[in-house]
Image 1 (spheres, one colour):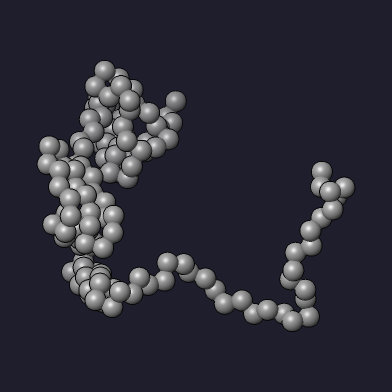
Image 2 (cartoon, one colour; image 1 turned 45 degrees about the vertical axis):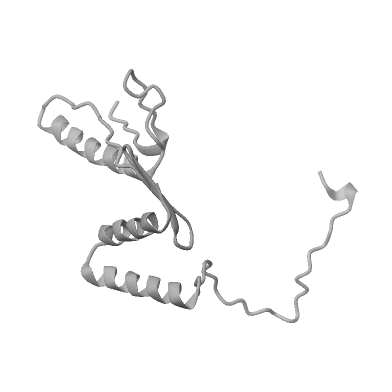
Length: 143
């Protein structure tokens, strides 16, 4: 009692959604908003509302100047889809300053062909007195 699951850990199987909902962020966000409303309904002794998923579509970049967009019955690809993807992602950012900073970073990366660092690492000061080479265990030592 009073345990709720949303997102990709939950499966709502019924006549309308025999395969459940997609395990992606937009579905989880909608489920989170729905759960919050239903928790308020519980507190206010109101009836619970059934969850209804609204598919906003999907977009993905697949390379430089290339993307795919599927929104309902509308499907397109190529550079126009790439610009659409960029526009939608910029508009979802919070704050005008964040949008400008991300846009400038994208412009810089596009014209400089700089992919940027994809990995965050910290510096490693190697102690020269320690041998860091791995020892290979003999067959007898392996359990």
